Image 1 (cartoon, rainbow, N blue to C red):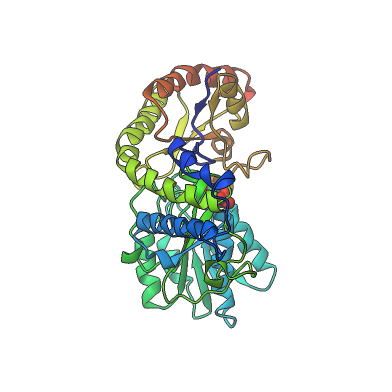
Image 2: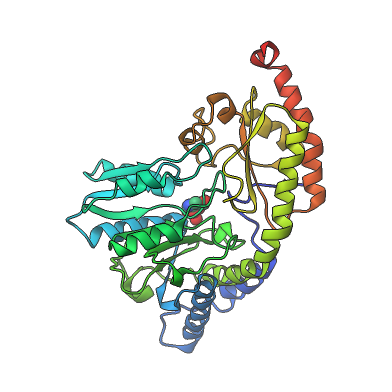
Length: 386
Ligand SMILES: *Cc1c(COP(=O)(O)O)cnc(C)c1O
């Protein structure tokens, strides 16, 4: 059976171009980049090239890029570094809709004596900017707010937030794992101090990420060990994966135009066609400020998990809430923060596309999903009574 993969915010296919660049660095060029001999040193030179490729995607300086093991490590490193450099400050501002890599760390820090403000979002998943401005204090050590949300695709006004925080000298971290490669980002024109990205969300391999640290921003390492990354992150470099991440950054730069035209068209077609074919359905999230590949759709009187199971039988891969939330009966914290009614939040699924999707695949989903929803609603006592 053919798989129709519409779960690209969970992870993406490693691009064959990316894998091809990685392969020689396992069995042939396996040297340690820190070695004195040129067998290792050549790999070190190749890592410099990867660092440049990553930097180029966001218009950063290569020296501002630190390789990490994943988006989660980048998020954790930035947050701990910001707190360590300002030991007197005990307040953090974040949002109610962060990925667990930020949200759960903030909750952990709340148990360690930090005060956390989680800025709410409105019905469309947009950040409440007045609430944000009102809750910054002289005690605020860090603001950590994602660039784009993984469940709804809603994009936050990061440039505006950065400019405001810069004038007040407040450290700013943004989790840009979902935004990177989908929308243009010019980090030098913003005042962002820390930015996280992850390889497997942009057609690179899993288990590698990067952290941008703005020149002049105070930093302290999360992994203390060898002198790798100029002492900013110990541990022998994951050479093949870093090289893959560098190539993946080029791949998404080359496809950004397509992402914002063809992929956006497919996403929009999916939404409008489902809307005309299925009643009692809503799109979760602001339609204008949104990633081109993501849609979160809520169906009343059905369970998201049931929809996923029936779609799975047809080879269609999507998700309900974030991968980390599914498996529990609670609807996603993102949809709850948006005030999505309980019934609709329970029946919400996320489709996230990539440049590998075709119109034939989208048409297949448009053709099959209405019958799935109808079948499930027939089983629901609430649907019959409504
Ligand atoms: C996937 C994701 C992460 C975590 O990245 P990993 O590389 O899987 O650790 C963090 N933030 C967001 C918004 C994500 O979508």
